[in-house]
Length: 123
Ligand SMILES: Nc1ncnc2c1ncn2[C@@H]1O[C@H](COP(=O)(O)OP(=O)(O)OP(=O)(O)O)[C@@H](O)[C@H]1O
Image (cartoon, rainbow, N blue to C red; front, side):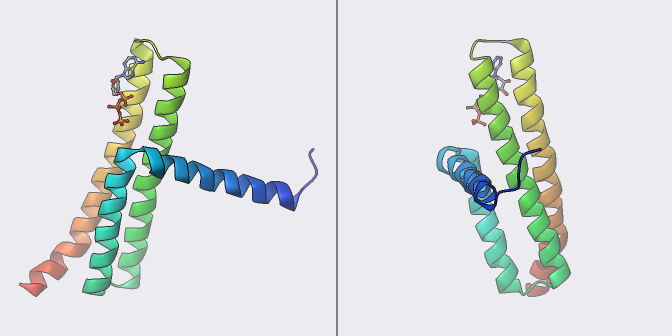
């Protein structure tokens, strides 16, 4: 087994940050998710939501962003390995996109459950 090395662990961490940079820098879907994320966080502070609600929001944000990041990685891998039209390549991309949609719908539901009562109270 390879010897444990702090330098190597730090390097892995910098690769992960590089991956986040590539995801945010090139993906229009990531920009949309980040815009919604910012709006949700600002709303959370303005409405002074509870700790438990923050936990649900943070987990929902992480769920959607990580699903989108996995989807992007799969899309790029498919483009690399199967740039030509291929039924399975298309299916793989559709399934990955479907996974993002499932996560986004769940996050939207969490957002509605948390924010709608606050907004009704404001009216
Ligand atoms: N190599 C391929 N073979 C067959 N179908 C493909 C292939 N590449 C993409 N597709 C089909 O086109 C759809 C969109 O592809 P892709 O996600 O690459 O494009 P996009 O619109 O640029 O996506 P995004 O905006 O998420 O980056 C896929 O979900 C799939 O149905």
